Length: 323
Ligand code: GLV
Image (cartoon, rainbow, N blue to C red):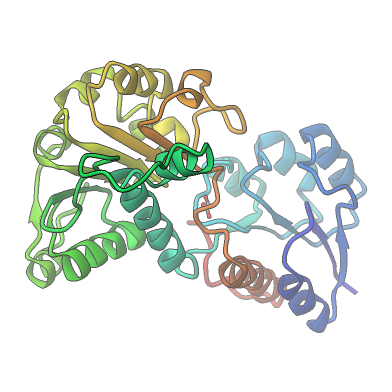
């Protein structure tokens, strides 16, 4: 009977799916990230045919080297796969898959939750109310910024970026501008969106900038001090992609110096650490990498990772193979 190793406790739906395919499933009994040497020792046993892994597992050449010969597939329960050395997996002849699609709506919703929360000063107002500072309605109290009819700049027009653009255009009459390595004329026609050939143009024009690029060497510190200075002082920056896309120290400095109006971020450069200067600022909202964290979506992600394993172990190409 094929054996599957799951690197940490995940929604039961994924485990159930693997078990009903007739596999023996072993879950890391400690509900914490497996250190690399722990993962290597697990794999050295040679007992496992597949691994269901998480974005917190660093799947590098050493890991693939020990997994070679037993493990056929590492199914990453995430859409992002910057934790995986894809070249090393190919060299070892091991498949790797991700979970695109099932989390698009949820991440787009979270992006909107952040975008509206920073514009309407929700966290700040909540802290104010809890501190007993609400002494009665005031005409000038906690004034925020409208989102409707503003210009929204999307960096990265993949599934999630497109969904955010959809909500902005259709739900809030926003003017969508976007930057991507590929232009999408159908998208432009559907949302009256406009392409900008450089990131700089987006930064100069947008009232809200939302980041949806994968983490690659070319997107590392895509937003740095210089680019933050190009944004309008009234603009907001939202990031639900990957932390290292923003130079977090530069962001903290820009927020402190009011170079931009605010930011709302779900991902951090050195997770789980958060730049300490961000913690003291009122013009930033911080959520701990939870953009896809709903009951429904995490269950779907677990099931899709399981599906990739089942298809791969049946000798076929898994639906979300990373090529
Ligand atoms: C979450 O960050 C994911 O990539 O799925």
